[in-house]
Image (cartoon, rainbow, N blue to C red):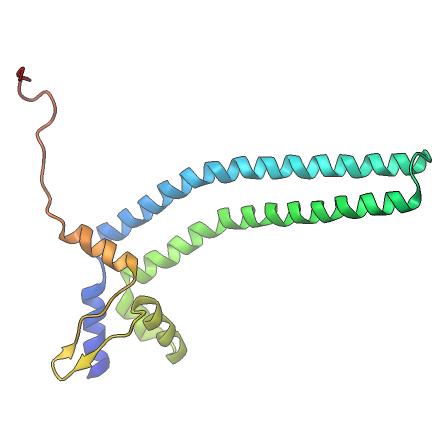
Length: 180
């Protein structure tokens, strides 16, 4: 009985499909804006890697020509290698970020669109994680049923959008503009 009531609660919490699609579109638009910054950062990082590789090559040449000692070479190349490693890690993180957003949105869309069925199919441990993720402060239950509980931001945001009054404004130029 308790679980069936909880499934009804989840069904009520679940946003309408149109709002889930709107959520995805808004996140993707925002991601594309941030993606432009990420692309610039990726180019800067790739350029930095190329510069460091050239610098490392110059040290090899300097050592081969006898212009620097082995000790100076070892210290300089060690520093260049450290910087190269940092730059390569930064580039990999940027690449992973770009790939993961689609997968995360796919998962979020499935979860938001099918809360009750995801809950039903989940293992006990998964149910605990879902419950903590959706209802971070828990969900009170009395004889009268489930009480009010704070949900995570996305559910609040989508609920506010669903409940917002819809009004239409007159298009500009429909009526003549009068001087004040």
